[in-house]
Length: 155
Image (cartoon, rainbow, N blue to C red; front, side):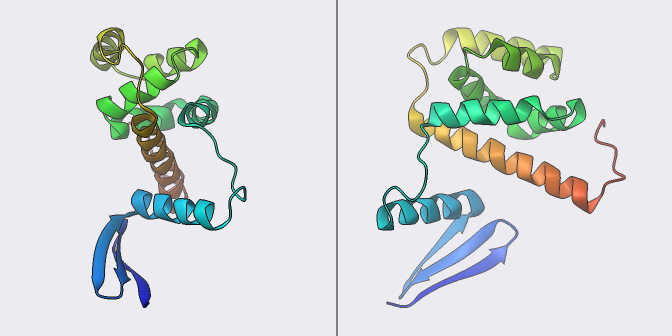
């Protein structure tokens, strides 16, 4: 079997398995690699549940500066923030930091949605996908800072 991977554009890759070609975004390619490693070498990678990942991500968010956190909240979008907030419901300190770094309108919308959406909680796949996207956004924030350290993030 012939296998090849090529970068098509920033964040998009083309994977060819013989004659079958698939296009994947960075987060999907990372997930594919992680699943392949888990299948080939069971126990080689620590496995965290999506809620444990969300907790670790929350600890990481607590260390972000206010401008970086505000930028992340804007880039993440309401749906992913809502899923992440639901997945970290018990962490009031994290929620307080997130809510104080977002606009009043967004805060109100998310608080109302937290009350009425996901009454049974969020599914692991949904929370896991939100975690992955937030982690990627944090990585991009750090990459952007290194590329342009003089940029003011408080826009």
